[in-house]
Amino acid sequence: MTTNGANSNGTPFYKRIILKLSGEALAGRGSSGIDPTTAKGIATKIKSIHQLGVQIGVVIGGGNLWRGATGVALGMAQSTADHMGMIATVMNALALQDALEHLDVRTRVQTAVHMNTVAEPYIRLRAIRHLEKGRVVIIAGGTGNPYFTTDTAAALRAMEIEADIVIKATKVNGVYSADPHKDPTATRFETLTFQQVIDGRYDVMDMTAFTLCQENNKPIFVVDFWSDDALVHAVQGKHDVGTLISG
Image 1: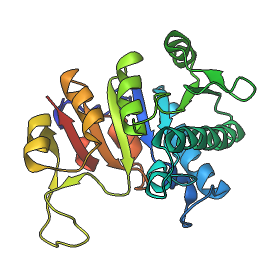
Image 2 (image 1 turned 120 degrees about the vertical axis):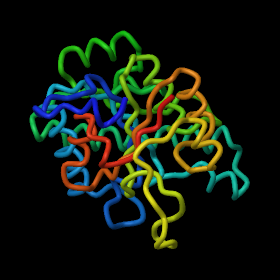
Image 3 (image 1 turned 30 degrees about the horizontal axis):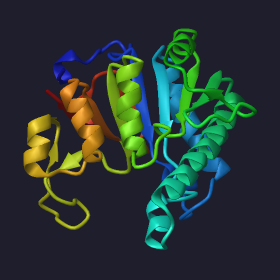
């Protein structure tokens, strides 16, 4: 898929997506916690593509509340630290759900870590059914297993629900040849192959997640989530707003 496939009439080029959001996105200008105003801003951007008819699954991280690596560094068992991180993603999912519901966007939270009083268990066919009914499905709890990141969860869920693409929401408008904040000569790639990412050692997703996408030929699009209309342009197939990685 290239920019040549972009739809000029405003309709979505991708019909079903997985949107990968970091937990830090919910912290706003703070270093941690959940900022309700920021949550509302994120929900507004998600609503903008939902109104186009895009079926949206959101996989959200928990780094604004807890990082498993921090606990491990302090001597905590990794399984315990990682499960705490999974619980943090559920808290973020509920915050995002509340923000979306206030904008009249119907949502469901599903989690791989069962919490039946606050969220549905993640069930693939049920998630697909929600998407077909026009609901945004926020998928929390990572993969439900320690030692795996929420990047891997995003890649896995994309395969399971047969999403057209994984959209990785970041603060940078794509993949660059070097750190654009440190190197003024850094150039942005509009498209890359999976192999070019590996050869160039570009930081896109963790290797487990990236390999899963590569082996299943699932495209990844890296976009600046906060840039005006960039998310809308991304789902319309206008890849000049980020970097498309594909086979």
